[in-house]
Image 1 (cartoon, helix red, strand yellow):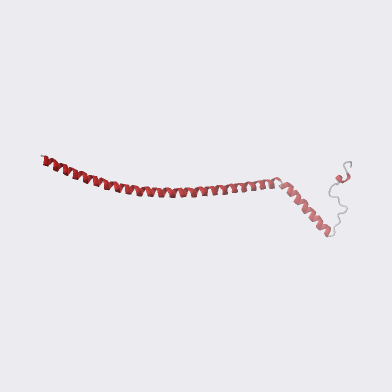
Image 2 (cartoon, one colour):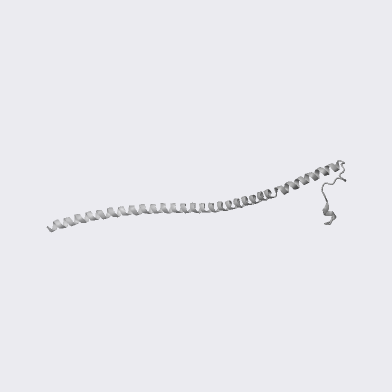
Length: 129
């Protein structure tokens, strides 16, 4: 009976040892796979962080460019507003310049405008005229 128990105990111990060795082999393989997975994930994280940094810099650059473009558009808008606001005054000035050039050309061609009064010059006589 004692021999039988000893044989059973030895058999059980051999099976337990085999199970233990199998478990240790599987654990080592799992640790190796986990280490590889961790290394891959760390590499992916580093790549993603580099992409994030590049995109952040690109966004900053694009925002500066957008700001400069908006500022340029605002200056163009102000310039156009000024041109529209003073269009009539500028048109009148151009008409006066053209008229003066035509008269000067006529004088150079020999016309005499000495006796022609184009408008009243009352401001030269003073306020009591």
